[in-house]
Amino acid sequence: MALPPQPWPTGEVEQLEPLVARVLAANASPYTYTGTQTYLVGTEDLAVIDPGPADADHLAALTKAIAGRPMRAIMCTHTHRDHSPAAAPLAEATGAPVVGCAPLVIESNEPRVDAPFDKNYAPMRVLEDGEAMAGTGWTLRAIATPGHTSNHLCYALEESGAMFTGDHVMGWSTSVVVPPDGVMADYMASLSRLYEREDRIYYPAHGPAITKPRQLVRGMIGHRRARERQVLKLLAEEPCEVSALIPVMYKGVDERLWPAAAQSVLAHLLDLEKRGMVTRESDIWAAVAA
Image (cartoon, rainbow, N blue to C red):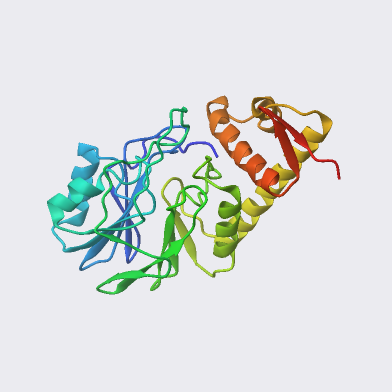
């Protein structure tokens, strides 16, 4: 999806529906679209979802949006550094507890294509699948959706049928799945779980709201299955390294996104290997003959 024309509503409060407002952070990139979208839920008292980067201007915009109202919770979908670092200073400023996903830091010497993990994230309470936070006129229920990261949660706003999907489902791009923490089988299972629900609208952390969620999720599942078939077809023709697959599979895609694509292809390969459909010798992958 092409970026919308500028100016973007960075730092502005956008009222999306009676219980939901949005503030866009100024951290646009090839991986974040126009930036991280922080959501405010409630009217009399509030929850903030994905407070975003610890950027002074973004924190000032959130403080303005909160407008002195009581804060019930600061809730993070996962702990990539474009989502959770503002939780600590916002908690200090408002007295609100940080609740939601579990802490997670993956130590690696390998270059990462996704945002590094937030090492300072320290929730007062970790929400388990199905647990809820509530305020005046709103209830947010945690839905475990591992795959993009193992600690990823979505939040269902029960009063309006909205779902806050973090990075698990986005309208502008598919989510990157980066091994070892990102697991393709988990990601697919989480998509199937959302497809079984009847949510009215999705509010992702990046990109536009999704008004036909089941239709999009069905397409995402089909897209991943098509990628899997493409991997198997290419490896049946000639065993190769992951890097050799990317120019063929992602021809026409912005090359700045190829490193992320390579990680998702690797996640597919690891899943196929576990299912006995591919093998590898050193860095060379091959399809198993039917």
